[in-house]
View 1: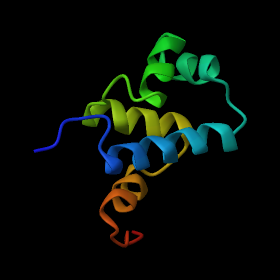
View 2: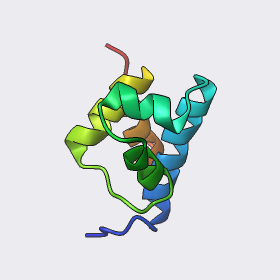
View 3: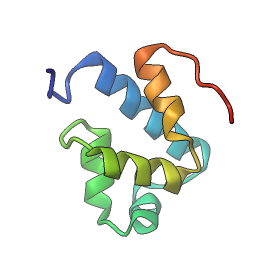
View 4: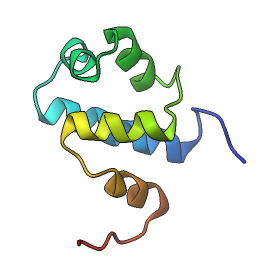
Amino acid sequence: MIKSTNHQDYQKLIAWLKKARLDRGLTVRQLGELLDEPFQFVSKVEKGQRNLSVHEYVQYCEALGEDPKIGIALVHSITVRKG
């Protein structure tokens, strides 16, 4: 099992989350507020200095208005079925 934040799949997932944040015009501080976390939490996640638990990942996606299944599909190159 790979637990490193440096793994290419994890970096792909974090890049997707960061792009979603930027696409919505949110700053690190604003996303932190939506998550009820200090902005340093978001910063560390985006820099690969902190792993997200599954529960945190889902909350992160919800705050960004993203479907968590899309990020998982990105990592595993699978097609997500709607519905």
